[in-house]
Amino acid sequence: MLVPAVLWGLSIPVTKYGLQSVPPLTLTAMRFAVAVVLLFLCSVGKPALGLNALPHAAALGVLGIGVGQVSQAFGIKGTTASVGTIISATIPIFVVVFAALRLGQRVTGRQQLGLLAAFLGIGLVALGREQGAGSVLSSGVAGALWMLVSAFAIAFYYVWSVELTRKYDTIAVAAWSTLFGFLALLPWCAWEMSQTSVHVTAGALGAAVYLGTAVSVIGLFLWLYILKTVSAPVAASVQYLQPVFGIAAAAAMFGDRLGLLFGAGVVLILTGLAFAVAARGKADEAVPHE
Image (cartoon, rainbow, N blue to C red; front, side, top):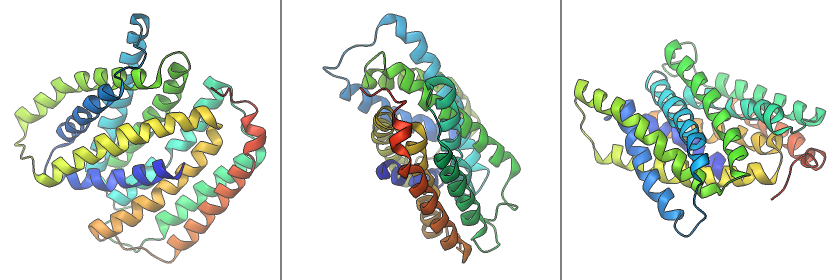
């Protein structure tokens, strides 16, 4: 559960780094070109996806990549890495809500308290940075809105993925949905490349490989397994560590300075995680294990 938090925490600073030389749609296409190849290699010898499931996989891919990941790339382009990481931390909140609505998972009072404490901790982490170019108020409003759209779409993508993987093989769902999302992205990427001069550097290529391998493949498989093993509130609570890793990485990569409240926010996040995870026994009763 900690591994996806680390991998995804680093994803936004790495994306910001890649966007320094490659525009958003192109970087996203490069990322998922890597992911598609790896996912279909992993699907060799696994059960195939039925024809009746392909429309669902296509819609899932368009939502997750065409909406979620593209809007995230535009959001990161229009804001700082630290602020983008903070906003992306709302994904677990949406996951819990969607899981309660679509998967019937119950959220206990203690878990609600833990999630609230962790979310307040994120606020302290956001405030616990010295004023400057990376502050929330100085960050682009449009970029922040793109990040919120991304968080909403990605959260629904994760929960919908769990619904499909209860009927079909996890790797097959991931591979085909990623392929459809990648194909839907290609025309827009071609348009962007016709409008913008693209120079693929080694840094941009490295960012795409990391995002495609660590985030889109390894992180996705771990996350889907976690969501099928424990309740959404427990899984989501650990993801509140993501902004801690992300902001620390942003500070190291881009010089974002951290203030005294940063440490207090981390403590509050960890306290919230303790509350949420301690209540897992009751919440897991509502989770169908496979």
